[in-house]
Amino acid sequence: MPSKPSSEASSERADARRNRELLIGAAREAIAEKGLDVSSLEIAERAGLGVGTLYRRFTTKEALLEAVLLDLLAELAEEARAATDDPDPWTGLQRFLTAMTRAQRTNHGLSELIGAEHDPVTARATADLRHALAGLVDRARDAGAIRDDVTVGDVAFLAKATLVGDRCIGIAASPDQPERCLAVMLDGLRPPGATALPGRAPRSR
Image (cartoon, rainbow, N blue to C red; front, top):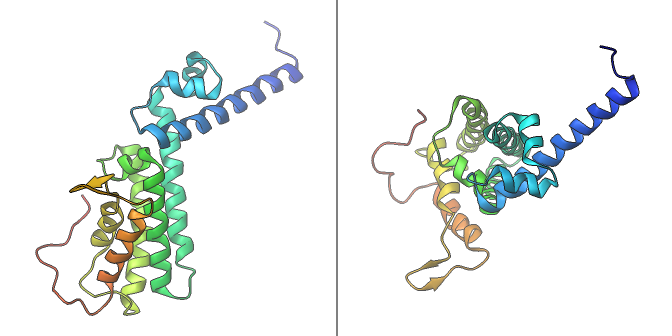
């Protein structure tokens, strides 16, 4: 069978790349708005493509979601590494935790991912993010900017704990509630701690 002209083959490759980019962009939007249970049909419709195209490019919906989630985790890890360039260890840590809080608040899928068990595909990226955060925490502790009994696990849970609901005992949360909660929590990291932390520190598994 004769091969296709190079111009036609190049056009097909360009279309395939374009469709892949459209699907990844649509999946990012859908995951952010609706979380990890978003359907293949909705992702394809957002991309302006058919479901068949999604499966030709990614084989399964899970493969597409994993590609997006790996990017999101990598972006957060890069934020953490960039924060280590701040000459003030406390400001760098504060900057990253604020970014992580906002990222989870605006992306339901990312929030679900960070709070879940991970498969082998995302486990490596999660470990990379944890390592980058640990660098920020160690740097701040070595500088005396945070109390010396705080671990990277404690700090990780601070960012997760800021994801409040819309209401509590009849009080409506403000649009800035996560950042307000984080500010109070960050003050608790400052030395000296008024109360020793009880029990054992959280650990990775």
